[in-house]
Amino acid sequence: MDSDPRLLWANWPRSRQLPAIRNMMGYLLVLAAGLFQGSFMLPMKFTRGWAWENTWLVFSATAYLVWPWFLAALTLPHLGTAIASTSGRSLTLVALFGLGWGVGAVTFGLGVDKLGLALGFTIIIGLAASAGTLIPMVVFHPGKLGSRQGLFTVAALVLVLGGVGLCSWAGRLREPVQDISTGPSRHSFYSGLAICIASGVLSSCGNLGFAFGGEVVQRAIEQGAAESLAGNALWSVITLPLFACNAAYCVWLLRKQRTAALFLKAGTHRYWAFGALMGLLWIAGFACYAPGTRRLGSLGTSVGWSIMMSAMVITANLWGFLTGEWKGAGRPAQQFLLGGVTALIIAICVVGYANSL
Image (cartoon, rainbow, N blue to C red; front, side, top):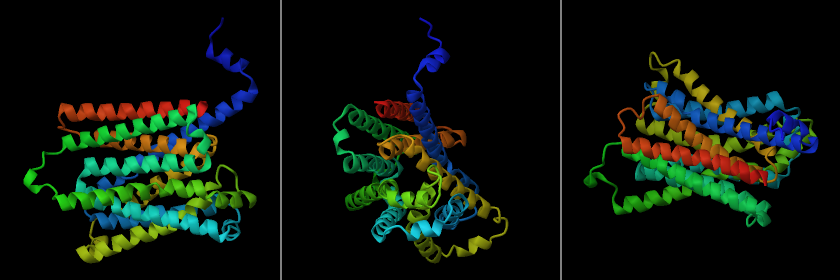
């Protein structure tokens, strides 16, 4: 029998070819979303003359306010009508998820500061991946949780957690060993743990807002928006409270640290462009994520979230490796990093298989 893939594809019924193409496009879009999300922090390496809060405020203004509304206005007809025709209940729910997402973003830095990068990052990203994957499945498709598809999706999630843990531990081994006397106190550890748990759960609100904000998307479609672009209406709404939380925190830091004058520091005018580029990369990720999940079937938001989170961590670590962050790291750190990236790649493959069942 001829095993030429081209002949096998040609002989495959068209009724199965089209869904396969649709799924493949979904995977590629969600992988692209992870690539953008894992890359958006890269321009921050070139803003060393500013404090963190200076760069983050420019990023927040562009990522959460300017770019989402520009993208929505550019791609959606009658955006205002679509939002105005959405029920108050749906808009309130989306706004609350956006607020939770914003608090999760702010507490991310606080939690990592208290527990350290390895443990803090593992807890936050692990919980964000878990909640963002499982909650939409449990709420919208509870019957699939015990099916083969659901079990393979959960298995992939376990691989995601393991991969994130290995990558985080690799980062811990890369750093100089911390003196026990300077380590966090018991009180600081427990308070940091509570912050990281809260941040992890709240950081999943971005995906939950997308999963539960279907009415906003539907109203945009009814106003003539293309199905693949209708998700832009939702991002324009959910990012408003996200901007408010991050901007408020940055302004507070600017006043506390007296760093607002750095905006006018000589030789830093290009930093504004780097901050705007961070915002563009960030919103590009979610602009790919929305149409990608719609092509992945009924479990799109669960499957897509796992894939995007995995691709995001892989991309961020690869950028770190390419920019010299791992230069001089010992062999154990590199082995843990390789193991973590491998686990995440396997997780993406398992999720793909689960979605084909």
